[in-house]
Length: 381
Ligand code: PAZ
Image (cartoon, rainbow, N blue to C red):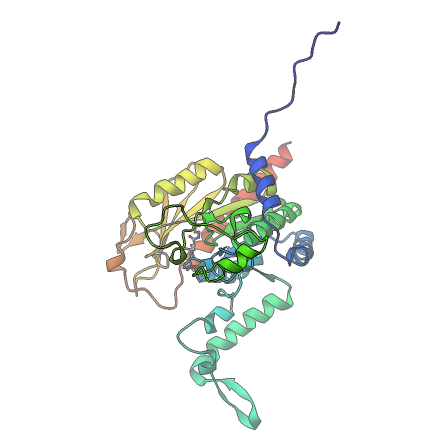
């Protein structure tokens, strides 16, 4: 009789199991195949040209409460960080794949949308029934228009929308995997405000959640299951309450780093409201997922300062200069501050300066070094 051979089957990879389960249980967005085709063509075009390409994610993700969605949970993000960063990446020579929440801010058009002014306020009647920019706005609009046209005509900007958290994750996974031919020239800059909680499909109502029990008798007469997301001993009458029970969204950053995009440089953002935990949470995320850079920011000061947390180096605060002070970076009034700004006493900045104008060159510098190191290592092998 033969001795039994010890089994060599590796233990199951829990991250892969969670990924498999999530993507099977949550249906893909209906435009995924169309988006994937556009993304593949765009990425392959720039990979062949040896150009660096950045995937910028931007805006909030919705958490639908019903399959035929009438209501959903959302967050504050307007997509300013993502849309503004995309413009600076284009200026820095990148091709930009802009994956954004539908109807959030877009690169270039952001200068004329979502503001207190209506875009028509920037226009006036011109000669012979034409429409032209108002004199005060013409110079800036021409500059923005030229940059936009150049990005479009040189095929450097691809804009793809998503709506819900599951749309976002499906799109992110597919695009990250398609970025493989870029090797280290691929950069993932994850600025979208991604929901941490969601309603899993098996607990989601098909139809609009009812606020009264008026349809109960009709429902009871049919074989259809009545949606029930209420607890069993409500203090307020059952027909008047809505208790929403959310599951945590699985954390896929590890899958992204190890499986979907193992050669690209990955930059994530960490948003907090409590200054005392920001840096700690950013460092925790970096240690846990082993990616390349976490950019920390606080809700109240995110347009003035961010903190770069990366492996093996000290935290680096990047700040807008106070008005009239010129260069600022880590310094405020000549003093290096490594504590967050006080939101009640934010310096009056130059309205023409945007913090993304400081963030993107710093990210590019890190990305250039990352590519160099990767190429050097490959040569040695
Ligand atoms: O869209 P916005 O400009 O108003 O805000 C940008 C931001 C705060 C959403 C972004 O900088 C960020 O931190 N994104 C990641 C958020 C998170 O999931 O922790």
